[in-house]
Image (cartoon, rainbow, N blue to C red):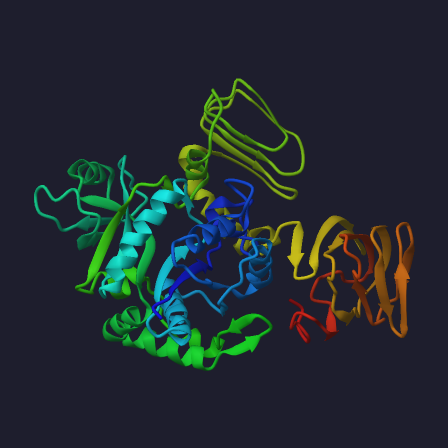
Length: 478
Protein backbone atom coordinates (compact mmCIF):
# COMPACT_ATOMS: atom_id res chain seq x y z
CA UNK A 1 0.00 0.00 0.00
CA UNK A 2 2.95 2.35 0.74
CA UNK A 3 0.92 5.18 2.29
CA UNK A 4 2.33 8.61 3.16
CA UNK A 5 1.47 9.57 6.73
CA UNK A 6 2.22 13.07 8.06
CA UNK A 7 3.46 13.15 11.67
CA UNK A 8 3.07 16.47 13.48
CA UNK A 9 5.02 17.02 16.71
CA UNK A 10 3.07 19.37 18.98
CA UNK A 11 4.75 18.95 22.34
CA UNK A 12 6.68 22.20 22.84
CA UNK A 13 5.98 24.93 25.41
CA UNK A 14 7.33 27.95 23.49
CA UNK A 15 8.55 29.72 26.63
CA UNK A 16 10.54 32.31 24.66
CA UNK A 17 7.24 33.73 23.35
CA UNK A 18 5.87 34.42 26.83
CA UNK A 19 3.47 35.99 27.78
CA UNK A 20 1.40 34.91 24.74
CA UNK A 21 2.80 31.37 24.75
CA UNK A 22 2.56 29.43 28.02
CA UNK A 23 2.85 25.82 29.09
CA UNK A 24 -0.90 25.19 28.98
CA UNK A 25 -1.44 27.21 25.80
CA UNK A 26 1.83 27.12 23.80
CA UNK A 27 2.72 28.92 20.58
CA UNK A 28 1.66 26.13 18.22
CA UNK A 29 -1.93 26.56 19.42
CA UNK A 30 -1.88 30.33 18.83
CA UNK A 31 -2.68 32.34 15.69
CA UNK A 32 0.58 34.30 15.62
CA UNK A 33 1.19 34.66 11.89
CA UNK A 34 -2.28 34.65 10.33
CA UNK A 35 -5.93 33.71 10.87
CA UNK A 36 -5.11 30.07 11.64
CA UNK A 37 -2.99 28.73 14.47
CA UNK A 38 0.51 27.47 13.76
CA UNK A 39 -0.70 23.90 14.30
CA UNK A 40 -3.50 24.41 11.79
CA UNK A 41 -1.11 25.91 9.24
CA UNK A 42 1.21 22.92 9.68
CA UNK A 43 -1.63 20.41 9.33
CA UNK A 44 -2.90 22.10 6.17
CA UNK A 45 0.63 22.16 4.74
CA UNK A 46 1.58 18.53 5.37
CA UNK A 47 -1.81 17.00 4.54
CA UNK A 48 -1.70 18.95 1.26
CA UNK A 49 1.33 17.00 0.02
CA UNK A 50 0.45 14.72 -2.87
CA UNK A 51 -0.60 11.29 -1.59
CA UNK A 52 -0.68 12.29 2.09
CA UNK A 53 -3.23 10.53 4.27
CA UNK A 54 -4.66 11.20 7.72
CA UNK A 55 -2.00 12.59 10.09
CA UNK A 56 -0.62 11.28 13.35
CA UNK A 57 -0.27 13.94 16.05
CA UNK A 58 2.04 13.62 19.04
CA UNK A 59 1.07 16.13 21.70
CA UNK A 60 1.22 16.93 25.38
CA UNK A 61 -1.61 15.28 27.32
CA UNK A 62 -2.68 18.68 28.71
CA UNK A 63 -3.24 20.05 25.19
CA UNK A 64 -5.25 17.12 23.83
CA UNK A 65 -8.68 18.73 23.65
CA UNK A 66 -7.37 21.96 22.10
CA UNK A 67 -5.46 19.97 19.47
CA UNK A 68 -8.55 17.90 18.69
CA UNK A 69 -10.74 21.01 18.45
CA UNK A 70 -8.32 22.78 16.11
CA UNK A 71 -8.24 19.72 13.86
CA UNK A 72 -12.04 19.56 13.89
CA UNK A 73 -12.19 23.21 12.80
CA UNK A 74 -10.18 22.23 9.68
CA UNK A 75 -12.30 19.09 9.09
CA UNK A 76 -9.12 17.00 9.36
CA UNK A 77 -9.51 13.59 10.98
CA UNK A 78 -6.43 12.17 12.68
CA UNK A 79 -5.13 8.66 12.13
CA UNK A 80 -4.11 8.91 15.79
CA UNK A 81 -3.54 11.55 18.47
CA UNK A 82 -0.77 10.17 20.67
CA UNK A 83 -0.57 11.64 24.17
CA UNK A 84 3.04 12.01 25.27
CA UNK A 85 2.97 11.79 29.10
CA UNK A 86 6.38 13.44 29.55
CA UNK A 87 8.74 15.20 27.17
CA UNK A 88 11.68 13.09 26.00
CA UNK A 89 12.74 15.02 22.88
CA UNK A 90 12.11 14.01 19.28
CA UNK A 91 13.70 10.55 18.93
CA UNK A 92 11.29 8.78 21.36
CA UNK A 93 8.30 10.85 20.20
CA UNK A 94 8.88 9.95 16.56
CA UNK A 95 9.44 6.33 17.55
CA UNK A 96 5.91 6.23 18.97
CA UNK A 97 4.52 7.77 15.78
CA UNK A 98 6.53 5.43 13.54
CA UNK A 99 5.32 2.39 15.47
CA UNK A 100 1.75 3.63 15.10
CA UNK A 101 2.32 4.23 11.37
CA UNK A 102 3.62 0.67 10.92
CA UNK A 103 0.40 -0.60 12.52
CA UNK A 104 -1.55 1.35 9.88
CA UNK A 105 0.69 0.30 7.00
CA UNK A 106 3.94 -1.66 7.44
CA UNK A 107 5.33 0.00 4.29
CA UNK A 108 4.30 3.54 5.21
CA UNK A 109 6.50 6.59 4.73
CA UNK A 110 6.20 9.38 7.31
CA UNK A 111 6.94 13.09 7.00
CA UNK A 112 7.76 14.51 10.43
CA UNK A 113 7.12 18.21 11.01
CA UNK A 114 7.14 20.38 14.14
CA UNK A 115 3.80 22.12 14.69
CA UNK A 116 5.29 25.56 15.34
CA UNK A 117 7.24 26.46 12.18
CA UNK A 118 6.40 29.08 9.54
CA UNK A 119 6.80 28.23 5.84
CA UNK A 120 5.68 31.04 3.56
CA UNK A 121 6.08 29.34 0.18
CA UNK A 122 3.92 26.25 0.60
CA UNK A 123 4.31 25.19 -3.03
CA UNK A 124 8.11 25.17 -2.70
CA UNK A 125 7.74 23.04 0.42
CA UNK A 126 5.49 20.58 -1.40
CA UNK A 127 7.98 20.28 -4.27
CA UNK A 128 10.82 19.59 -1.81
CA UNK A 129 8.62 17.08 0.01
CA UNK A 130 8.03 15.14 -3.20
CA UNK A 131 11.81 14.89 -3.70
CA UNK A 132 12.24 13.76 -0.09
CA UNK A 133 9.51 11.11 -0.39
CA UNK A 134 11.17 9.69 -3.50
CA UNK A 135 14.49 9.43 -1.62
CA UNK A 136 12.78 7.86 1.38
CA UNK A 137 11.21 5.21 -0.85
CA UNK A 138 14.77 4.11 -1.65
CA UNK A 139 15.45 3.53 2.05
CA UNK A 140 17.14 6.83 2.81
CA UNK A 141 16.52 9.02 5.84
CA UNK A 142 15.91 12.54 4.63
CA UNK A 143 16.03 15.92 6.33
CA UNK A 144 15.27 19.35 4.92
CA UNK A 145 18.13 21.86 4.88
CA UNK A 146 17.04 25.49 4.90
CA UNK A 147 18.94 27.58 2.36
CA UNK A 148 20.80 30.11 4.51
CA UNK A 149 20.66 33.69 3.18
CA UNK A 150 22.43 35.17 6.21
CA UNK A 151 24.70 33.94 9.03
CA UNK A 152 22.64 32.70 11.96
CA UNK A 153 24.12 31.59 15.28
CA UNK A 154 20.82 30.28 16.70
CA UNK A 155 20.53 27.28 14.37
CA UNK A 156 22.46 24.09 13.86
CA UNK A 157 23.80 23.45 10.35
CA UNK A 158 23.93 20.54 7.91
CA UNK A 159 26.87 20.19 5.53
CA UNK A 160 26.13 18.44 2.28
CA UNK A 161 28.53 16.06 0.54
CA UNK A 162 28.80 17.04 -3.12
CA UNK A 163 31.28 17.20 -5.96
CA UNK A 164 32.24 20.43 -7.75
CA UNK A 165 29.56 21.51 -10.23
CA UNK A 166 26.99 19.43 -8.38
CA UNK A 167 24.81 22.39 -7.37
CA UNK A 168 21.86 21.38 -9.54
CA UNK A 169 21.00 18.31 -7.49
CA UNK A 170 17.73 18.22 -5.57
CA UNK A 171 19.10 15.99 -2.78
CA UNK A 172 22.58 15.43 -1.34
CA UNK A 173 24.20 12.94 1.02
CA UNK A 174 24.79 14.46 4.45
CA UNK A 175 28.45 15.00 5.28
CA UNK A 176 27.93 16.16 8.86
CA UNK A 177 25.65 17.91 11.33
CA UNK A 178 27.19 20.97 12.99
CA UNK A 179 26.26 22.55 16.32
CA UNK A 180 25.25 26.22 16.54
CA UNK A 181 28.38 28.10 15.42
CA UNK A 182 29.91 31.45 16.41
CA UNK A 183 29.16 34.34 14.06
CA UNK A 184 32.37 34.25 12.04
CA UNK A 185 32.02 30.51 11.45
CA UNK A 186 28.40 31.03 10.42
CA UNK A 187 29.54 33.61 7.86
CA UNK A 188 31.97 31.08 6.41
CA UNK A 189 29.23 28.45 6.25
CA UNK A 190 26.91 30.75 4.30
CA UNK A 191 29.68 31.86 1.92
CA UNK A 192 30.61 28.26 1.11
CA UNK A 193 27.15 27.35 -0.16
CA UNK A 194 27.54 23.84 1.24
CA UNK A 195 25.78 24.40 4.56
CA UNK A 196 22.09 24.61 5.39
CA UNK A 197 20.17 25.44 8.53
CA UNK A 198 18.87 22.35 10.28
CA UNK A 199 15.06 22.49 9.96
CA UNK A 200 14.04 19.55 12.16
CA UNK A 201 11.75 18.26 9.36
CA UNK A 202 12.29 14.65 8.24
CA UNK A 203 11.00 12.08 5.76
CA UNK A 204 11.66 8.34 5.95
CA UNK A 205 9.96 4.98 5.88
CA UNK A 206 8.57 4.32 9.33
CA UNK A 207 10.07 0.83 9.46
CA UNK A 208 13.42 2.16 8.24
CA UNK A 209 13.60 4.74 11.02
CA UNK A 210 12.73 2.09 13.59
CA UNK A 211 15.41 -0.20 12.15
CA UNK A 212 18.07 2.49 12.52
CA UNK A 213 16.82 3.52 15.97
CA UNK A 214 16.95 -0.09 17.14
CA UNK A 215 20.53 -0.32 15.84
CA UNK A 216 21.90 2.99 17.18
CA UNK A 217 19.65 3.58 20.24
CA UNK A 218 18.18 0.22 21.26
CA UNK A 219 17.21 1.52 24.71
CA UNK A 220 14.96 4.25 23.23
CA UNK A 221 13.50 1.78 20.75
CA UNK A 222 12.70 -0.75 23.50
CA UNK A 223 10.98 1.80 25.72
CA UNK A 224 8.88 3.12 22.83
CA UNK A 225 7.73 -0.37 21.87
CA UNK A 226 6.81 -1.25 25.46
CA UNK A 227 5.09 2.10 26.10
CA UNK A 228 2.93 1.85 22.98
CA UNK A 229 2.05 -1.80 23.65
CA UNK A 230 0.83 -0.76 27.11
CA UNK A 231 -1.06 2.28 25.75
CA UNK A 232 -4.81 2.63 26.30
CA UNK A 233 -7.52 4.15 24.17
CA UNK A 234 -9.04 7.25 25.82
CA UNK A 235 -11.89 8.70 23.75
CA UNK A 236 -10.17 9.66 20.46
CA UNK A 237 -6.67 9.58 21.96
CA UNK A 238 -3.88 7.03 22.41
CA UNK A 239 -2.73 7.40 26.02
CA UNK A 240 0.89 6.25 26.32
CA UNK A 241 1.91 4.42 29.50
CA UNK A 242 3.66 7.05 31.61
CA UNK A 243 5.55 4.71 33.95
CA UNK A 244 7.23 3.05 30.99
CA UNK A 245 7.76 6.05 28.73
CA UNK A 246 9.37 8.24 31.37
CA UNK A 247 12.19 5.69 31.69
CA UNK A 248 13.37 6.66 28.20
CA UNK A 249 16.36 8.94 27.97
CA UNK A 250 15.84 12.24 26.24
CA UNK A 251 17.44 12.47 22.80
CA UNK A 252 16.84 14.12 19.43
CA UNK A 253 16.50 12.40 16.08
CA UNK A 254 19.72 14.11 15.00
CA UNK A 255 21.82 12.67 17.83
CA UNK A 256 20.10 9.29 18.08
CA UNK A 257 19.92 8.42 14.37
CA UNK A 258 20.70 11.02 11.71
CA UNK A 259 24.31 11.69 12.75
CA UNK A 260 25.04 7.96 12.82
CA UNK A 261 23.21 6.49 9.84
CA UNK A 262 25.02 6.02 6.51
CA UNK A 263 21.84 6.82 4.59
CA UNK A 264 21.15 10.44 5.62
CA UNK A 265 20.17 12.80 2.80
CA UNK A 266 19.44 16.53 2.81
CA UNK A 267 16.95 18.23 0.49
CA UNK A 268 17.51 22.00 0.17
CA UNK A 269 14.44 24.09 1.05
CA UNK A 270 14.12 27.78 0.19
CA UNK A 271 10.56 28.58 1.22
CA UNK A 272 10.50 31.42 3.75
CA UNK A 273 11.06 29.13 6.73
CA UNK A 274 11.26 30.24 10.37
CA UNK A 275 11.09 28.29 13.60
CA UNK A 276 9.63 31.40 15.32
CA UNK A 277 11.93 30.79 18.25
CA UNK A 278 11.76 34.31 19.69
CA UNK A 279 9.85 37.58 19.47
CA UNK A 280 12.51 38.93 17.13
CA UNK A 281 12.13 36.00 14.70
CA UNK A 282 8.34 36.31 14.85
CA UNK A 283 8.67 40.00 13.99
CA UNK A 284 10.90 39.08 11.02
CA UNK A 285 8.32 36.56 9.82
CA UNK A 286 5.49 39.14 9.67
CA UNK A 287 4.91 42.04 7.27
CA UNK A 288 5.90 45.44 8.72
CA UNK A 289 4.79 49.04 8.06
CA UNK A 290 6.91 51.85 6.59
CA UNK A 291 8.63 52.39 9.95
CA UNK A 292 9.52 48.71 10.24
CA UNK A 293 6.92 48.13 12.95
CA UNK A 294 4.67 45.11 13.39
CA UNK A 295 1.55 46.29 15.24
CA UNK A 296 -1.17 43.88 16.37
CA UNK A 297 -4.38 44.73 18.22
CA UNK A 298 -5.35 48.08 19.78
CA UNK A 299 -1.98 49.85 19.41
CA UNK A 300 -1.11 53.55 19.12
CA UNK A 301 2.48 54.64 18.45
CA UNK A 302 4.39 57.87 17.83
CA UNK A 303 8.03 58.10 16.76
CA UNK A 304 8.46 54.33 16.97
CA UNK A 305 10.68 52.30 14.61
CA UNK A 306 11.42 48.61 14.12
CA UNK A 307 9.27 47.49 17.04
CA UNK A 308 6.86 44.63 17.63
CA UNK A 309 3.84 45.82 19.64
CA UNK A 310 1.04 43.36 20.45
CA UNK A 311 -2.13 44.20 22.36
CA UNK A 312 -4.56 41.49 23.46
CA UNK A 313 -7.12 43.20 25.68
CA UNK A 314 -6.54 46.98 25.94
CA UNK A 315 -4.94 50.02 24.32
CA UNK A 316 -1.14 49.88 24.26
CA UNK A 317 0.59 53.20 23.48
CA UNK A 318 4.31 53.72 22.84
CA UNK A 319 6.42 56.83 22.20
CA UNK A 320 10.06 57.16 21.12
CA UNK A 321 10.83 53.44 21.02
CA UNK A 322 13.22 51.62 18.68
CA UNK A 323 14.04 47.93 18.28
CA UNK A 324 11.81 46.86 21.16
CA UNK A 325 9.16 44.23 21.79
CA UNK A 326 6.01 45.10 23.76
CA UNK A 327 3.45 42.36 24.37
CA UNK A 328 0.29 42.81 26.45
CA UNK A 329 -2.07 40.08 27.65
CA UNK A 330 -4.92 40.20 30.17
CA UNK A 331 -2.59 39.42 33.07
CA UNK A 332 0.96 40.36 32.01
CA UNK A 333 3.02 42.87 29.98
CA UNK A 334 6.46 42.21 28.48
CA UNK A 335 8.85 44.99 27.43
CA UNK A 336 12.28 44.03 26.07
CA UNK A 337 14.92 45.17 23.56
CA UNK A 338 14.89 42.96 20.48
CA UNK A 339 18.49 41.92 21.09
CA UNK A 340 17.53 40.58 24.55
CA UNK A 341 14.40 38.58 23.72
CA UNK A 342 16.26 35.27 24.07
CA UNK A 343 16.33 36.07 27.81
CA UNK A 344 12.54 35.87 28.07
CA UNK A 345 13.01 32.22 28.99
CA UNK A 346 14.88 33.38 32.10
CA UNK A 347 11.82 35.39 33.12
CA UNK A 348 9.69 32.26 32.76
CA UNK A 349 12.17 30.38 34.96
CA UNK A 350 11.80 33.11 37.60
CA UNK A 351 8.02 32.84 37.42
CA UNK A 352 8.24 29.08 37.94
CA UNK A 353 10.58 29.47 40.91
CA UNK A 354 8.10 31.92 42.42
CA UNK A 355 5.28 29.42 41.81
CA UNK A 356 3.37 32.00 39.80
CA UNK A 357 0.57 30.68 37.61
CA UNK A 358 1.47 33.12 34.82
CA UNK A 359 4.24 30.77 33.72
CA UNK A 360 1.74 28.11 32.65
CA UNK A 361 -1.77 29.59 32.52
CA UNK A 362 -3.44 32.55 30.91
CA UNK A 363 -6.21 34.37 32.72
CA UNK A 364 -8.54 32.66 30.25
CA UNK A 365 -8.23 28.89 30.67
CA UNK A 366 -9.48 26.48 28.01
CA UNK A 367 -11.37 23.31 28.84
CA UNK A 368 -12.83 20.62 26.56
CA UNK A 369 -16.30 22.15 27.03
CA UNK A 370 -15.18 25.78 26.38
CA UNK A 371 -13.28 28.22 28.58
CA UNK A 372 -13.39 30.34 31.72
CA UNK A 373 -11.92 33.79 32.29
CA UNK A 374 -11.17 34.98 35.83
CA UNK A 375 -12.51 38.53 35.66
CA UNK A 376 -11.97 39.58 39.29
CA UNK A 377 -11.01 38.12 42.65
CA UNK A 378 -10.43 39.09 46.25
CA UNK A 379 -10.59 37.61 49.72
CA UNK A 380 -13.32 34.94 49.75
CA UNK A 381 -14.71 35.75 46.29
CA UNK A 382 -13.94 35.25 42.61
CA UNK A 383 -15.81 36.23 39.43
CA UNK A 384 -15.52 34.19 36.23
CA UNK A 385 -16.93 34.36 32.72
CA UNK A 386 -17.82 30.86 31.53
CA UNK A 387 -18.14 30.25 27.80
CA UNK A 388 -19.66 26.83 27.00
CA UNK A 389 -19.54 25.45 23.45
CA UNK A 390 -22.70 24.09 21.79
CA UNK A 391 -23.05 20.55 23.08
CA UNK A 392 -20.52 21.25 25.84
CA UNK A 393 -21.11 19.60 29.21
CA UNK A 394 -19.25 20.39 32.42
CA UNK A 395 -18.57 17.48 34.73
CA UNK A 396 -21.03 16.52 37.47
CA UNK A 397 -19.11 17.82 40.46
CA UNK A 398 -19.18 19.39 43.89
CA UNK A 399 -17.03 21.79 45.88
CA UNK A 400 -16.28 21.36 49.58
CA UNK A 401 -15.14 24.93 50.24
CA UNK A 402 -17.13 27.26 47.98
CA UNK A 403 -20.63 28.09 46.82
CA UNK A 404 -21.47 29.52 43.37
CA UNK A 405 -23.99 31.94 41.85
CA UNK A 406 -24.66 31.65 38.11
CA UNK A 407 -26.20 34.32 35.85
CA UNK A 408 -26.91 33.47 32.20
CA UNK A 409 -25.80 36.32 29.93
CA UNK A 410 -26.78 34.66 26.65
CA UNK A 411 -27.88 31.22 25.53
CA UNK A 412 -29.86 28.56 27.36
CA UNK A 413 -28.31 26.40 30.10
CA UNK A 414 -29.53 23.08 31.43
CA UNK A 415 -28.63 23.04 35.11
CA UNK A 416 -28.27 20.11 37.48
CA UNK A 417 -28.29 20.93 41.20
CA UNK A 418 -28.54 17.82 43.36
CA UNK A 419 -31.84 16.18 42.30
CA UNK A 420 -33.15 19.19 40.34
CA UNK A 421 -32.68 19.57 36.57
CA UNK A 422 -33.95 22.81 35.05
CA UNK A 423 -33.28 25.44 32.38
CA UNK A 424 -31.85 28.92 32.79
CA UNK A 425 -32.37 31.52 30.08
CA UNK A 426 -30.89 34.97 29.48
CA UNK A 427 -30.93 37.20 32.61
CA UNK A 428 -31.97 34.29 34.84
CA UNK A 429 -29.84 33.07 37.75
CA UNK A 430 -29.45 30.29 40.30
CA UNK A 431 -27.49 29.49 43.47
CA UNK A 432 -25.35 26.36 43.94
CA UNK A 433 -24.83 25.73 47.68
CA UNK A 434 -21.55 24.45 49.07
CA UNK A 435 -21.44 20.66 48.74
CA UNK A 436 -24.21 20.42 46.12
CA UNK A 437 -23.67 18.16 43.09
CA UNK A 438 -24.01 20.34 40.01
CA UNK A 439 -23.31 20.69 36.30
CA UNK A 440 -23.96 22.97 33.32
CA UNK A 441 -24.94 21.78 29.84
CA UNK A 442 -25.31 23.78 26.66
CA UNK A 443 -28.00 21.95 24.72
CA UNK A 444 -28.39 24.72 22.14
CA UNK A 445 -26.56 25.55 18.92
CA UNK A 446 -25.19 28.91 20.16
CA UNK A 447 -22.38 29.69 22.59
CA UNK A 448 -23.55 29.84 26.20
CA UNK A 449 -22.17 32.68 28.36
CA UNK A 450 -22.48 32.62 32.15
CA UNK A 451 -21.14 34.90 34.88
CA UNK A 452 -20.11 32.82 37.88
CA UNK A 453 -19.58 34.37 41.31
CA UNK A 454 -17.75 32.10 43.74
CA UNK A 455 -17.66 32.67 47.50
CA UNK A 456 -15.99 30.60 50.19
CA UNK A 457 -12.92 29.90 52.27
CA UNK A 458 -10.92 28.45 49.34
CA UNK A 459 -11.40 29.11 45.61
CA UNK A 460 -8.68 26.99 43.98
CA UNK A 461 -9.38 24.80 40.95
CA UNK A 462 -8.37 21.70 42.91
CA UNK A 463 -11.50 21.97 45.08
CA UNK A 464 -13.40 19.80 42.60
CA UNK A 465 -14.80 16.30 43.17
CA UNK A 466 -15.90 14.83 39.81
CA UNK A 467 -18.58 12.13 39.69
CA UNK A 468 -19.28 12.01 35.95
CA UNK A 469 -17.38 13.49 33.00
CA UNK A 470 -17.82 13.25 29.23
CA UNK A 471 -14.10 13.88 28.67
CA UNK A 472 -12.51 11.12 30.75
CA UNK A 473 -11.60 13.34 33.72
CA UNK A 474 -13.66 11.58 36.40
CA UNK A 475 -11.82 11.53 39.71
CA UNK A 476 -9.36 14.26 38.64
CA UNK A 477 -9.08 18.02 39.13
CA UNK A 478 -7.53 18.65 35.66
